[in-house]
Every structure is written in structure tokens, then in C-alpha cells.
View (cartoon, helix red, strand yellow):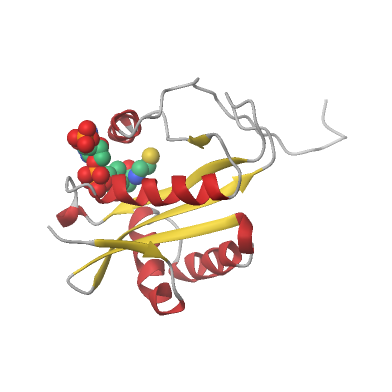
Length: 153
Ligand SMILES: CC(C)(COP(=O)(O)OP(=O)(O)OC[C@H]1O[C@@H](n2cnc3c(N)ncnc32)[C@H](O)[C@@H]1OP(=O)(O)O)[C@@H](O)C(=O)NCCC(=O)NCCS
């Protein structure tokens, strides 16, 4: 399969939002649109790369420069893979590999020497892809949350 990878342009915006909706289907499309705008609003601290085949957008990678602590890293900022998606019919053709390479080049130009990512514990496919792309697992964590309620004991 022939495809090309490039930095997102304004013309890609609507198709990117649709693909975001496929990756994270539990969020309404309006929320994807505003989150996408917010990401672009970060300027040099975020990047989106898209893959095209036969004129259609078939995948994307979103990345940021994270300055808060990222598990396992020893430098700051680090390049962080925030989202990676390839349309089902186009998988296993090296599209995700090319998108991640583009992110890695961007992060390197921004001065980063580490590229980090995360995946849900149950996403074993995602883990396998990360390892195939050269990432190694650092640790598994459980997040906790409680509302601040000073009257509760
Ligand atoms: C994960 C995903 C982006 C991979 O996209 P892709 O274009 O098919 O990946 P590539 O073809 O570039 O493959 C990259 C490497 O991962 C491996 N790989 C891809 N899919 C895999 C799978 N389902 N299981 C195991 N390994 C897999 C490939 O073999 C390749 O390694 P290799 O070159 O050593 O053979 C795609 O399956 C997807 O969008 N999945 C749903 C969303 C998701 O899980 N995103 C990642 C969240 S962590």
C-alpha cells in the first residue's frame, strides 16, 4: 500500500477530527473538534502528523512536549505520544511506524532525547506495537481520584 506522511495542515483538520472520533468513540465529535483546536493552539509544544493513501486520511499521530514528570524518564521536556491511530483497512503496512518516526524527528529537532508513551493495561495490541516500535515497558500504575470534601472524614 502506498501512503505518505506529513505534518497536519488546515485542509486535513476535518478528516483528522473524524479519525479522532474513531480512536476515542466515547467522546462527542464537538469535543474532538475543540480538543483538536486546543492541541493546535499549543504551537511549538505539540505536533500532529497525518498519513494519506489514495487521497484519504488514513492515520494520525499526536505528540506533545511534556515538561511535567513522565514515568521512567530522566530528561525534560520529553516527546510524548498522545494518540496514534490507523484506519483498520490500512493496518500492518508500516503506517504507524512512519508516523512515529515523524514524531521522533520532530521531538529530536525540539531538543528531546527521550520519546515516551502510554497505553491502557488491557490494550495488549497497543503494548505489542509499542515494543515493535522500539519502546520498552517501564511500569504499570493505577490512578486514584477522590473529590475534595473537607467535611467528610
Ligand atoms: C496500533 C496501530 C496504530 C498500529 O498501526 P499499524 O499501521 O497497523 O502499525 P504498523 O504496520 O506500522 O506496525 C508497526 C509494528 O507493530 C507491529 N504490529 C502492528 N499491529 C500489531 C498487532 N495488532 N499486534 C502485534 N504487533 C502489531 C507490526 O508488526 C510492526 O512491527 P514490525 O515492523 O516489527 O513487523 C493500529 O492498530 C491502531 O490504530 N489500533 C487502534 C488504536 C490503538 O491501539 N492505538 C495505540 C494506542 S497505544
